[in-house]
Each structure stands twice: as C-alpha cells, then as structure tokens.
Length: 262
Image (cartoon, helix red, strand yellow):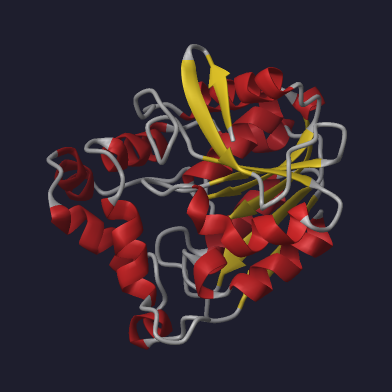
C-alpha cells in the first residue's frame, strides 16, 4: 500500500489484509538499511488476528520515496505524518534497532498518538564505530559484511533458518544489499547521533515492552535492561541464544513476546 507523505510516496505492507484505521493499528519499523520484509511472520499474524498492520519502508528504503534521513527526530516526525495521511489516531509501534529509537522518540513527543511500544534490539545511546561509519559512507561492501556478521548470533552463522535450505546470513546480506547507496550510512549516523534516548524513555507514558537477544553484540541485552529501568512502565523478554536480528533468527519467540505485549 502506498500513501503520499509530504509529497513523497510511503510504502507499507499490511500483512495480506486491507488496511482499516478503525481497527487497532500496529506499526512495524525496520532497522538500518532494511525494509518491511524483515517482519513477514509478525505482520501476517497480527493482520489475521483483529489488527490493522503497517510494516513501513522508511524514507529512501524499499518502495518508499525520498532520501534516507539522518535524524531519529526527523524520522519520528515522518512517522506521525504517515499516521495523519492514513487517519490513524493512535497505534502501537514495534521497532527494531533504529526503528526502536524512532518509536521511542515518537512516543515521547507525541504521547497521544502511541498506545504501546515494543522495542527490539535497542540501547540508548546506540553508538556506532567511526571506522564502520566510514565504510558505510564510502558504500564499501565490507560495511554490509560486518553488519550482517555482528547482527547474528554465532549459532545463526551455521544454520538455523526456519525454512529448510535458506541461508540466514546470506538472506540478511541480500536484504541490506538492496538498500540504496547511502542508506546504510544515513541509518547508522541517525543511530549514532541520537542522544535524547534517556530523556525520551523517562517521558514515555504508554506501556513499553523490550525484547532483547541474549547474544546480541550490537545492542547488548544489559543495555536494554538499563533502558527498561528508565521507563515508568516497562517489561522485558530476553530471548535465549538470539542475536540482534532476533525477529529473523527466532521469529516464533519474538511473535510470542509481541502477542503478550500487545
């Protein structure tokens, strides 16, 4: 589904059912240089169990137009513009990594528009190594290799895909390779530059559920637990053996956590 947002097309998957703003709405926000396809299992479940679903492509990603944004705050404002365009008064937001920062910032600054948060693979702050940023800015493929390596637990490097014959690491690498030149750098810079996370967490008034990977090297579980302590109404699920890409590595466990949270 496409909708015009500030003169640019924004694209969202709806889980296989027509979008209806009158139903409870759940919005899914992907991580750096990814797109809506990271959420296939989770979006289909909610779309077929009484919710309307929007799995958004962020600006400059997937089928959404515009340039990739380098500010978490600007992305949160864009998200609320999507709500306005689709006449969504209030929604639960599920965000992964960069998407989690966007969700957190939106909930802090637009409390009337957010009913609940589910934050997956998140930390505040979310620093990015300078050399890694430089590789991404140069569109060096090593930046993609490093990201897909670090984002998966060791077990995922030797198999474990839920669909026999598919390669977990290779699939993630192809997904990031589809991103436009500059998208990975823009996303990583947005994560690195966002310094308002602790204040945002303290300002959030809706329930927050954090879903953390026990083996997450990019946003370690201990950082997620610290973030939970900053929120006034937070619960935590820590998924055993999962890395940063837990909605792909352990999709059933993530879905179970989302069902309990939302």
